[in-house]
Length: 249
Image (cartoon, rainbow, N blue to C red; front, side, top):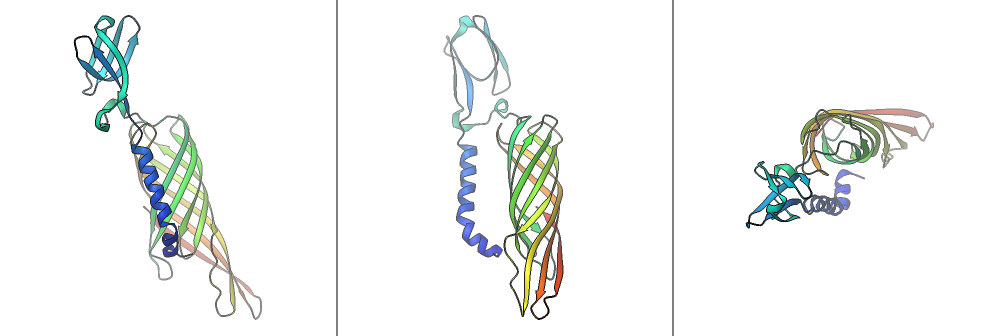
């Protein structure tokens, strides 16, 4: 299956998947605390401290901190953020530990007389993030070199900060399984075997909310693909190795 054929077949599905991700991220309603005072004032923000029967401490959108006694308060509620604004106190850092899912779309850029200049790449990684900023996981994907392959790999990531914006480094290593075989030619039969893969790079993560982040990265990508050719007239086998050195963006 060629890259053009794959895109033709799966393009509608890819578009629907992206729309689903977009809707999932932006349809989540943000909530904020609202303090209604007896004098008619309304204070919106994030409650920092609350002691029943005594007082409420709230941080506003402007990052001012107000303290109101119980006698001043009419009621306290939690409401949707107007117009889906993103106050600074609602943009929380990504969770320090737990399950993570990473969907990666990119291009494997490179050149060669017998290879495609740019190959389409799609990866999905599922893993676990530890409190020490390390994430370990496993991934699967689809890539287009001269042959379409399914890479299966382990994924290691380290985020340098726990803030909303953080650089990170990652390493991936595994094996690519061929999804198609090379077309036989002039009495020669080809058997695609796949081969080892390796990737290492750096990037930046931008937090959207406490569940979702966007990451941009650049990496070195190595892929070896082995093909065994058998000649009909003497059944002699010859191993052919193709090695790709690509820039993944």
